[in-house]
Every structure is written in C-alpha cells, then in structure tokens.
Image 1 (cartoon, one colour):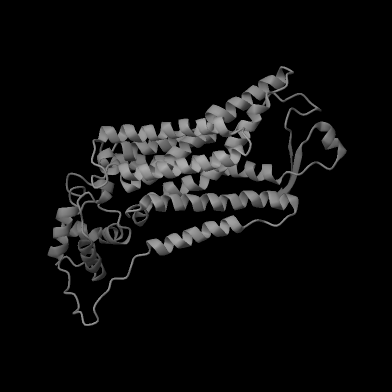
Image 2 (cartoon, helix red, strand yellow):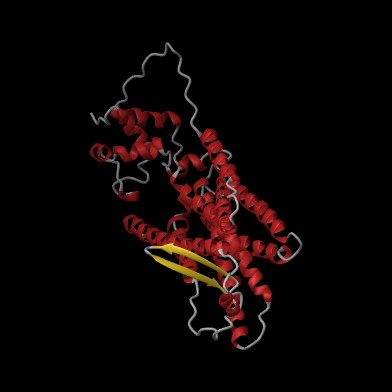
Length: 403
C-alpha cells in the first residue's frame, strides 16, 4: 500500500479509536462513580418501589436523581426499551484492532520485529501477537471462573491476574520490538476488557432481563460476575491507556529493562485509579478519602522519572571545544541510517531526506525524532550510534547548515 495512504488510514483509524475509547471510558467511569456513590434510600416511597440505592447530583444547571434497582421495579413492569452500554466497548476494540493491523501487522518487519531482541519471521511474529490477545483472555477468564467465588476470591483473582500481566509484559519484551511490546500488552488487556463485556456482562444481563420478563427469579451469579468484571475493567483502564500512549516516547521502551518500566507504569495507573474509586465510596459514606494509593502511584512515577532520566556526560574540564559539524557528516549519517525509508521512492510519514533542500526543510523533525525522542530509526533497525545522534543534534543547534 502507498505509504501516504497507509499513513492517512492510520490517522483516521487513530482518530476514530480515540473517539470511541473516550465514549467507553467516560461511560465506564461514570457508572463506577454512580455505583460507588449510591446511598440507601431515605424516603418510604422509594423503598416501596424497590429502590436499592439513590444519588442526587447537580450538573449543567439541573438536578438529577438516579435510582438503582437490583431487580425489576415493583411499581411498574420492566420497560420494553432498555439502554444497553456495549457498542462503545465493541467499537473501541474493533477500531483498535484495525489500527493495530494497519500499523503493526501490516508492517510487521518494521514495527513488530527488532532483530536485536528476537530474530524471527514476520509471519511468526504476527501469529504470536494474535496468540497473546486470545491467550490472555482465556487464562484471565479461567482464573476468574475458578477462583472468583471462593473466600477472598477478589484478592486471589487480583493477585493471580497481576502476576500473569507481569509475566506477559516480560515475555512480550523478550519477543517483540519495545514499542510493539508495550502496545501489545495494552492491547491484550483491552481485549480482555471488551471480552468481559461481550462474553460475560451483556449475556448475563440478557439472561436476567429474560428471567424477569418471564416472572422468574434470576440466577444471582450473572449479577455477581458482571459486577466483578466491571470492576476489573475500571482498574484495567489506566494501565491500558498508558501502555498505548507509550509508543510516542522511545525512552520508555528502548531500555534493557523495559518490561519493568511497563509494569511500573501500569501499576501506578491502577493505584491512582483505585484512589478515585475509593473516593466515590468515601464521599457517599462521609468518611475520609483514602488518597494513600494515589500517593504511592505518584511515587512510583517519580521514581521512574529519576531512573530513566539521562545521565549527564562527564566532560573533562580542559576538553577542547568540538569542531563544527559539516553538512557532509550529517549527510553521511542520513545516507547510512535514514534514507532507506526516506528517499525519492519511499517516503515514510511523507518525509524525504535525499536532497540538501529536503533535509533542511525537515531539519526540526529529524532533530526531534533522532535526538529528542530517539524514536528513529524505527527499532534502531539501521544501528545509528549515540555519537551519530549527537552529530545530528549539534548540526541542528548550529542552524542546520547545508553548505
């Protein structure tokens, strides 16, 4: 496919994916907040109607009174028209998988594979990445079904799933290019989130609705499983988002222990999310908000920032100033490291660098990608050295001369 058309499709799919993700996450966050903010009804008429929890809210100049019924209302038949929240989830996964296909699977040799990490064929890398998505859901679902209803089941499931995520993060970083590994771990968790909706939450709700309309007592297992998976989804959300965003920051995934970086990022997100979930309940109960988990999460992020910060170079006090960088030196670096993807025939990201005029035109982008972000060359496929990156930096800071 033409590089420009592929990039345009990438943009449109990413845009659509973000829109649908905002809709899904927003709805999920709202219902988690609502569920944790409910209080027992105080008025007898609400109790007589079968209301299990209520919440008053003010927003946009109006007042809202939300009521939750564990079963059908006692004062009227179950309405025929019910709002079901699932297309936000399905469309987010579908657009995300389409984006993953266009960017990573279609360009597996460039984006999935880093031969310095693991040297294998594109077909094997593609197959294994798809196995990651399916296998994580199957193992996660099995853990939930076996241990979820035991005493302290939520704790056991949480610990087992955490250990499995850590293992999957380590394994992905041993097999795939760092950027792809981070995104793949986020994608596998996001797949489990959407599968929770598709295979557990919505089918369970449909069975409950069918039983109520038939005048039967619903099996409580459907509500219990749906609640458990919904809680899991809200804790998965921030880890998934940070894993997806990480592909824009090469310094996150290019290190030797990049899997540890990924795990700590996701842990921080889960801890911070827990504090907000607990805050809703504390606010409803009139108790102190437990911000300790968020503080630990922020502490993890601060520790990561110090760990990943670039170390200052030791320059001898009497060192002579470096000689000015010539355009010929920079042009040689471009020819050896960059022109394979940015030439007259192939113009990845619609950028060509094969003439002095084009290199001057794209000098700032080259500086950002090669030096600041260290994203290019992709997966360092052409083995650019730190000294060559320094050369590009000095050339740009000297005004990017071409003579």
